[in-house]
Length: 323
Image (cartoon, rainbow, N blue to C red):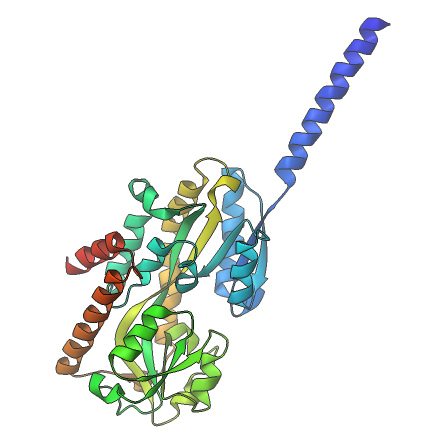
């Protein structure tokens, strides 16, 4: 009888241990996802694919869509999310190094962007992905950022002086650029800049081509405006997580997977640019092109000096762009 009781106790203990392990494995990590289109958007679909891939790395995710990036970032910061997908400019509060991939004028072409991001996703660059408790576990492109104008005659850098430019109130880099050309800041956020541009509260705004249709920026452009076909910066979405909340090596597995998805993400951005009518694009003269390059170089150098951009990352981007 004593032996039977002892065996029963051992079996019961083993069962409890198994159930406990199963419960822990089944407990999903919350992945907060900013997507202006909510669960119907490209970023959220990316998150669903990421959820599927992460199972092989020992993590089950529960994606949670947000149409407010401010709320998504706050929930992650306050521990309501284990990981989050945000735009690069929002990531600066968690990892200024990977935010610097969006440095003004540093990556003028999609080819340079691809090389830079894929380089940073490699294991030898893992230290650059971490900042305190946070780790950037993936970067994927969302296209170049362009200047949207209500008046297509205002393309010269000097002509921007005195014009109102809708500027994200948390984007210090953009503020510096706007003030550098003598323009006036019109404070906005990612949820209001489009309406301000469309109703004439500002003369210009900056955004990727993917915003043209969903945010109806063609209303602000009308028949007199256009989009300057000169990339000001590269727009990205980034995955950020708390390193301690995930299995060892999870971040690198995530970055390796993200690299394999880069081309498909870039294709989405390319289609958005192709969907903009050809007549909307404004090709600037070579002389104006040089002025834009010089202006962006000056602003970027200033921001590195102020610590707004990470010097190591920016130097790497500039070396890649020069190749």
